[in-house]
Amino acid sequence: MSPDTHRATAAAILPLVGGPDNVTSIAHCMTRLRIGLRDRALVQEEALKAVPAVLGVVDDDTYQIVLGPGAVARVTPEFEALVREAPPAPPAHPAPPAPPATAEALRARGTALKEARTARNSTPVKLLLRRIANIFVPLIPALIGCGIIAGLNGLLTNSGLLPAVVPALAAIASGFMSLIAVFVGYNTAKEFGGTPVLGGAVAAIIVFPGVAKIEAFGQHLAPGQGGVLGALGAALLAVYVEKWCRTWVPQAVDNLVTPTLTVLLPGLVTLFGLMYLAGEVAEGIGWFADRLLATGGAFAGLVLGGLFLPLVMLGLHQALIPIHTTLIEHSGYTVLLPILAMAGAGQVGAAIAVYYRLPRNRSLRTTIKSALPAGFLGVGEPLIYGVSLPLGRPFVTACLGGAAGGAFVGLFNQLGAGFGSTAIGPSGWALFPLLDGPTGLGTAIAVYAGGLSVGYAAGFAATWFFGFTPQMLRDLDTDPDPSPATAPPSPEPAPA
Image 1 (cartoon, rainbow, N blue to C red):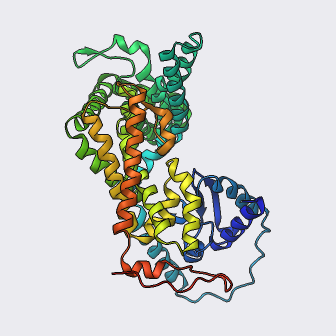
Image 2 (cartoon, helix red, strand yellow; image 1 turned 60 degrees about the vertical axis):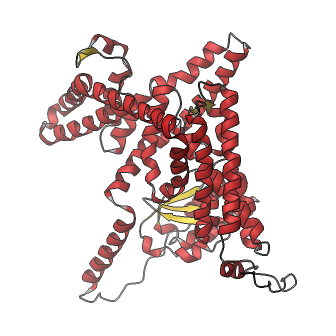
Image 3 (cartoon, rainbow, N blue to C red; image 1 turned 135 degrees about the vertical axis):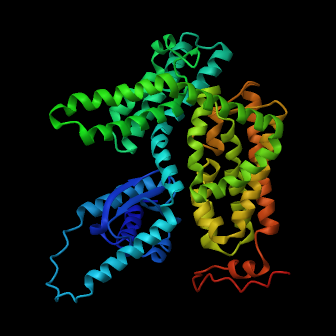
C-alpha cells in the first residue's frame, strides 16, 4: 500500500471516532490502533467496521481498531498527523438556555454509558488481568530478544563454533533474566499508583546475592527465590505502604520517612516470608505443568489448544503471562506456549478453507490473502476479527483445529519429547527460533512443525465440512459488491 493509501485510511477513521477533538491519546501495538476517547458515544462503530482496511474493533480500556501488522505501524503516524494538524474547533454559537432537565438528562446519559461499559469491560477479573498484562507486556520485547540470543548461543555451543563468542552471548541472553524481578517490581508500582523506583528497589532484594546469608522457615534463601511472583507481591506491598505513609507522615519529613518505610517494611516481609512462599508457588507451578503434560499430555493439549482462542476473545489469556514467565524462570522455557500456539494454526487452516469454500466472495478472499502471512507468523487477530469470528461457525472449527494440534504436541510431551519456548510473545512460524528442550533442538522443531501441520489440516477439514450450512453458502458465496462488467452469474443452490 502507498503512503497515500495509509493516509486515506487514517482520514476515513478520524471522523468516525468523533473527530480530532474527541481523541485524547494515540498508540499502537502489533495489530491495533489504540485511541483514547473523550466520549465513546460519538463513535460510529458500524461505519468504522465498513472501512476497507479495518478488520475489527475492540472496545476496551482504549478504543482499539484492528488494522493488522505492518498496516497499523503506517496508519498510526498518519492518524497522529491528522489529529495534530486539525484546526482548532470554532467557537460554538451561543446556545439557548438549557431546559431545567438538562442536568438530569446528562446524569442519566452518563450513568447509562458507565453501566454499559462496566458490564462489558470492567468486571473485577478483567480489570485485574488487564493490570497484570500491563506489568508484563512491556517486558516481552526483551524476553524475545534475549530468548533468540540464548537459542543462537545454544547452537554455537553444540556446534563448537566461535567459542570466544559463546560467553559473551550467554551474558547478553542471561543479564535481563537475572534482573527481571526488578523490572516487574518497577512496572507493578507504576501500574498500581506507587513510585516505580521504590517498587523496583524492593523487588531488587530478591536477586541480591547477599540473601543467601538469610534464613527463613528453617532454610537459607537463594538469590532469585520467588522470582517474578515474589517481585510482584513485594512491589504491591510497597505501593500500599507508600500510600499509607502519605496519609500521616508530615510533609516536612515526607521525603525521608516515606521512602525509608516503603523499602524497609516490605523488604523485611519479602525476606522473612514472601520469598519463601512465592518460591514454593513457583515450584508448584513448574511441577504442575510438568505433571500435567507427562501424565495427560494429549488430553491436556487438546483442551489447552481448543480453548485458547475463546480465552483470547474474553481477555482471560492475560492470566497466563505470569505463569509463562515463572516457567521460563523455573526451567528455562515455558512448555505451555507451543501448545497454545496451535490455536493459531487451527485459525489459519480454517481461513484457508473459507477462502476455497467461497470462490465468488472477492472481498472476503482479499481479506484472507492479506491476513494469512501474519497468521502464519502467529498474529491471528486479522483472521479472527476479519474472517472467522464474524462468520461464527468457522471460529468454532478453528478451535477444533487448535485442539487437534495441541493434542499432537501434548502427546509427544507425554512420550518424553518435551520442549518449550524460551520467551513469550511470538507463535506460529515465529516461535521456531525460541524452541528449546531436554531432548534437543531437532526434536523440538520436528514436533512443533508436526503440531502446526496437524492444526492447519484439522482446521481446514473441520471448516470445509462443518463450517458452513447450505444457507450460509448461498448467502456468502457471492461478490457483495460486483461491478456491472464483472458481476458473476447467480450461484447455483448448494446441495443440501
